[in-house]
Length: 303
Image (cartoon, rainbow, N blue to C red; front, side):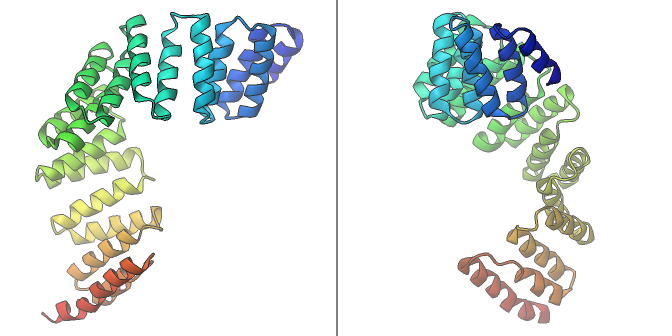
């Protein structure tokens, strides 16, 4: 930042100097400073599309999508072949629920830059949200064809098969491809593990959850998933260790206390089961449900 300050001081009439510093401010989420510099840049050269572009990008980062559309529209007026400006305006329109406008802008971005996989991926997201899964899959596959080393595209495609199609075997294949592209993709390991659970492959699932945890040990969801998998196959001591770790990472989750109560019950540790079932009951309905579970524990213990 000291260098950017020196550049602005040395070239106070150069719009690019203010813009360069603004981009750095934006990267640090110092949005007010970025906006101030970009306004100065625009005053110095209102015809430079880069100033409007970065004003739009900063407005987008501030969740000011209406202003973002206005600024990207100005950038497009000044540089009508800027695919990125169309893509950013599409994203801002999407955030405002202007889906038809978003489709139009993303398609124009694709027309201008047909080799950019990110634009096809974004169109795929729009189709997914419209529950038009065939079109979503086609666009994600196109993005993968253009950028086969982008692991996120595979992860997105796997999510369509996992959530929308419930085709868990295909999801496993695609998440595996994601891991070929990037072996450090914890999300791919996690969702491949969930797919393995659905396919009745607990050992494979536990292996995938373990890989995800190794990459992101502070993600309580990953630890909880492995705990559930251990519990499902009767590995209660392993499940207990994982549930305790998941609770440490997600202490606000009442569901975890209920789940660990089931593990304590399976281990014959009934008082601990009762204590866990009644721990951290957030609301009346949950409290009543967990009370019924607590009430039943002594009866089950006698069987």
